[in-house]
Image (cartoon, rainbow, N blue to C red; front, side, top):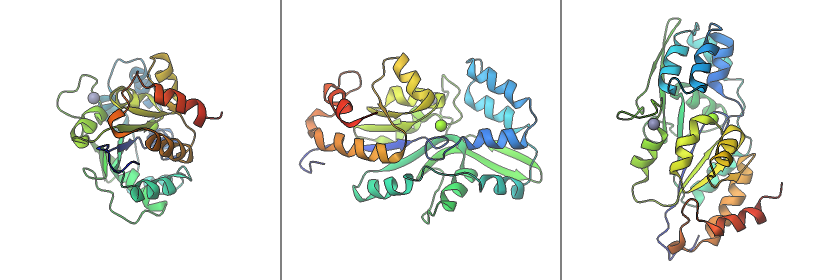
Length: 251
Ligand SMILES: [Mg+2]
Ligand SMILES: [Zn+2]
């Protein structure tokens, strides 16, 4: 990065399916919830309910103890390139935050299993839904649902980004799913895979396709090297990024 510039990039990343290799909430529901959780999921997919109501109703169908939940969570693999990417971002002085509809208890455990020793506090490094387990009952709460959010998000990623970024720019967002679509619209540089990639393509939102955090690191390093500080890219008008994309993404 050019040190003379005012550019202060900031990175936000989804967790489920982005940092973790699968959607941990889906795994928990598949293994531990009454099968009617899928009907609730369909209501969400059709846009009839937001992710907050969806998760609240689905978690009420979960029957588990903390011990059972932990042993299931311990089977969840991370993108193997994520730890190296996280260290790279730290070395580069790039602030990195996880924003997730998923649950703090689970995210913290997955990250610790992957060797993270530092704190993973909901409200500083992480902004996500919260989960407590009492006996066999789960108690979800949604501290970052945001003040009345039009989409009824479980975690309003747009609101978290708005609050956390301050004057930082460009905002870089990394994600994989439909719960990332509003954040992708609010970010300057988007890395997308799976459903988020399809959504971006359908809605003409500039994005960089990726498979792993190794791709994100390589492409982001090139982007940050290539853009002078007074030419921070704006969504939909980045010829710089379009050209970069062709060079950097050899599919
Ligand atoms: Mg996801
Ligand atoms: Zn929202």
